[in-house]
Figure 1: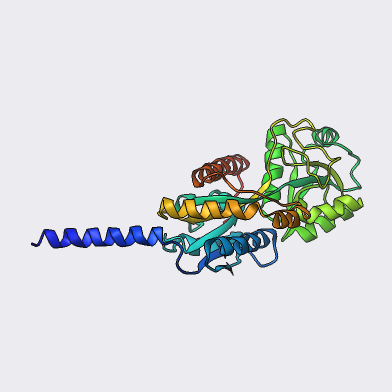
Figure 2: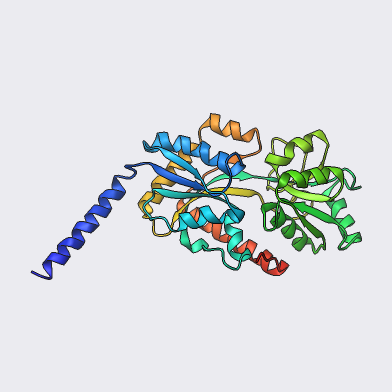
Length: 320
């Protein structure tokens, strides 16, 4: 009798777990966004969440938990129950921070992927005061002035910084990094000639590139942007294989059942196909995308983590 009763209890718990997964979702879902409201990642999350709410039949709530390096929100999501009701909407920083900080408070192994949600190409631009008009001329200029060419970024370890590190690493260039506290001031100084070049997301640089206040040389995606069709990709411009767009995606705490991950992935796939939503984001340089499977996104994040870890290690970049 003492053996049978625990066995029955185990079967009961397993049946409850299976029912919970098959009945998913049966209450509101929370998506933690570890940045301030109004930014690119936040807007993508909100657009996707609205469509997912309709598809899943439950409210999908956005909860902003901004902090330096997105740590607070990411750590909160890592500690959540792996039941599909607390998710994390992340961006490139997620794959950078564990290699950049001594104690990030989370690891990529604490999460499991659901799907990509968006891709945002960056623009490689120079100040109008710099006498270069192509990537080829920029490379020659930087090689003629080793350690003298300055490049701005929106912050140490940010997406623009990592793109510039990848660019200089691939070409063997020696340049000076000038980090700012956000893209706005960095672009202002690029316009004014206080810094020479910058990799920045299309969402914040496109208006200035179109107006001529900065000089766009290339975009970091593997295909040209329909918003700047006359601007080549970095790959086209001679730096073969270069690609480093900003990405956003949805993740869940490690241990979340595969059935739930697959359901959420299918919902994201359906959301990004909504033409009105896609058109609205394309206008500002964001391409909404979905991964074909959670495992595909897991592999994508692992590749990004390894690529950025190598750059950080070789560049001896660290934030204490």
